[in-house]
Figure 1 (cartoon, rainbow, N blue to C red):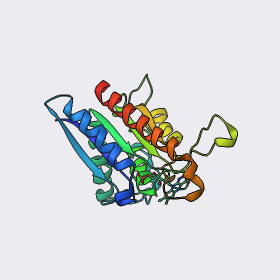
Figure 2 (cartoon, helix red, strand yellow):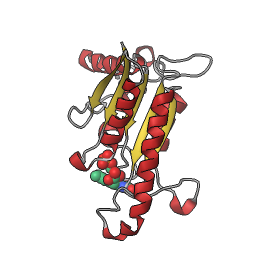
Figure 3 (cartoon, rainbow, N blue to C red):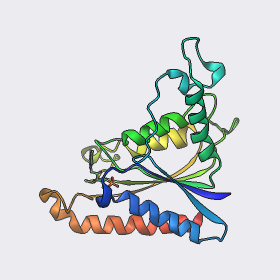
Length: 212
Ligand SMILES: Cc1cc2nc3c(=O)[nH]c(=O)nc-3n(C[C@H](O)[C@H](O)[C@H](O)COP(=O)(O)O)c2cc1C
């Protein structure tokens, strides 16, 4: 099956910015060829549990005796990894919550990132190596980590580090800034910037959907 895995992690319901952007990407991607389908994973409606043993972070052969992973934990981890490994591409809605990754999304990433199993480099490519991932990250304010006064995005860099740096996936990130301009009065002056940023994110996602 030629599928896009579409992952959502927003908790903002009808106010969500990431959910419609992920849906827009998914629609454009699946419309681009007749045999394409979309598999959705909503981590808010169906959260995966937290890891409960460091054994889940290491391939079986690397575990210490006290790191016992039970059959259900192994089966879930296998299912989540296989779902990504089988995808032609992945899109992830990754809103900024408290400058960081939504905890549900973090739990999903924790299951995927297994040393000795899904880690990757050019000499020993892992099972997720090279799979394209588009990260869609709206945030209430605006951030630019290259400028000290505007730094503070611990969402996108962490995801890029895990999926791209460690697992060898081909990550492209798209952000939408000032999404709280219509909610927080001090941000009202950024309403135009917010609209422009969202439109740019939408356009970039359509471009990427046509490329992937
Ligand atoms: C729990 C929570 C924490 C948030 N923390 C931040 C933050 O640290 N910085 C920020 O710029 N916006 C923050 N926001 C605003 C969200 O990033 C913004 O509303 C974004 O559009 C959320 O995307 P979503 O609606 O798709 O979930 C927070 C929102 C929530 C609900």
